[in-house]
Image 1 (cartoon, one colour):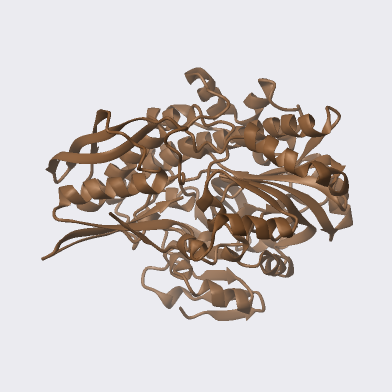
Image 2: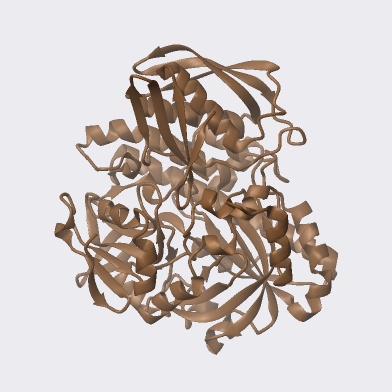
Length: 136
Length: 476
C-alpha cells in the first residue's frame, strides 16, 4: 500500500514498513503501481535484482531506478519484490512477475526517473517510512 | 522570499537572500503570475541554482516557472566553460524534450469534416510507447548511428524529406556526441522507442492558425490564418531518462571528489572540464540526437497518416523544431566581454534574435522561431527570438504555460468521459492512451499561456508571431 503525494509537475509516493528491507520492497511495489495496472500481473517468473549506494537514500533511489529499468528496458511486468541481503552499500533480492504483454498489462503512466527531490527516509518507534518523487 | 521589482516584468532576488548564493536571481513575471509562482518552491530552487560553482550572470526564471526537482522548470543558468560546472539536473531526465511544428497544405475549414478520422489514424500510426514497443526497432549499430547523427540518419533511411533538418535547432544533431558514453541499459531502453511520444505532458496536437501578430515572420514560416498546423511535444524517451539516471548515480561520489556541496542532491554537478563532466556532456548530446531522430520519425509517421486521410498531395512541411531541456556550449556577451559558457535550459527555449548566424537562411531576417505549447483546451504560440534575449537571458525564453495544479488535484472529482465531452463541445477532439493522462493535463491544471507570452513579449525577449488553437489532441 502506498499514498500518492502532491507535486506541481511530478508525482510522489509515501510507503511505510517494519524494516528498511521491507521499505525497499514496498517502495518498489508502489513504483510499479504508478506505472502499470498491478492486478493482471502473474508471478510466473523470478528475476534477480540488485543495486548499490553509499547511503540509505542512494540505495533506495538506485534500487528504484533498477526496478524502472526492469520495467522499461527489460519490458517486465513485476508484482512483488523480496530483499534477500542488505549491507550499507548494496541491496540484492528477487522480483516476481512475467514478461510484459501490453494487451494484458496496460500502462498507467510512463515514469522517466527517480529523483532525490524532497526524498525522505524516516525511522521511529512505529517502523520505517519514505517519501519519493518520480519524474513523469 | 524577498523580491525587488526591477520594472513591470522583472523582479530580483538579491545575492544576499541566502547563504551560498554566488549571484542574484532575475524572475520574469507579471504581478499576477508571481502570485502563482510563490505558491510552490520554484523560487527557492532558483536560489539554489544561484549557488552553482562558476555561474555567469544571474540565475534566471522564466514566467512559466514551476517547481521541478533540483532546477526549477523554466530555469536558465549559464556556467563558465573553463571553470564552471555541468548539472544533469539542469537538463532533466527527458534530455532534449522539445517541440516540433509542421504546417499542412490544408485549412481548418476543409479539414474539420475528416478530423475524427485523422485523429484515429494518428492514434493508430504514432504509438505513445506505453505498450513498451514502437514502430521502429533499431539494431545496435543503427542505434549508435542515431546517437551520432540524429534527425539526418532518420531522413537518410527514407523517413523524411531532405529539407526537414534544415528547420531543426542544430540541424537535428549536436556535434561531439558520444554514443560510447551511453550505457548498455540506456540503449536497451531506447532501441524500440524511436517514433513514440511517451506519456505525461507529451502530445501530438492538430491546430489551426487563429491570429497572426507579425506578418513578415508568419510569411517567412509559411503560416496564414485558418491553416492547419501540427505540434509535437516529446523527447528522448527511456534512452535519455536512463542517461540522466546513470550519471546522477555517479555524481554523489564525484561531487565529494571535487569538493562541491549544494543544498539539494538533485542539483548534483561536476566541473565541465572533469572526466565525469565531459562524459556526461557526450552522453547528453547523444541522447539529444536520439530525441531529434524521434521527432523526425514521428513527422514521417504523421505524413503517412495525413496522406491516408487527405490524399497523397497533402504536404506537411517543417516550420521549426526546438529543444527545451538541454545544456549547450554557446558564446554570449556577459558584462561587455564575450563569454564561453554552458547554457542550461531546463524547461526553457533557445530564442536567438534576427541576424544570428546559427539561424537557417529563411529565418535570418526574422529571428529564430520559438514554439510555446499551451494546455489542451487553450492556445499555443509561435514567437521569434528578440534582441533582449541575447542581452539578458543567454538567448533564452519560456517553454510553455507552466503547471499550476498537481496531477492529483487535477483529477479530483472529475471523470475522463465528461471532460472529453466538454472539450468536444469546444471543438477539440481528444484521444488518450490512459484515462489519467487526459485528466492530469486538463486546461485548468496550467497557467494562462497568454499571460506568460505577454511577459516575454513585453520584456523584449521574444516577439509574438501567431496564436494557434487546438482542433484535436493525441495523448499518452
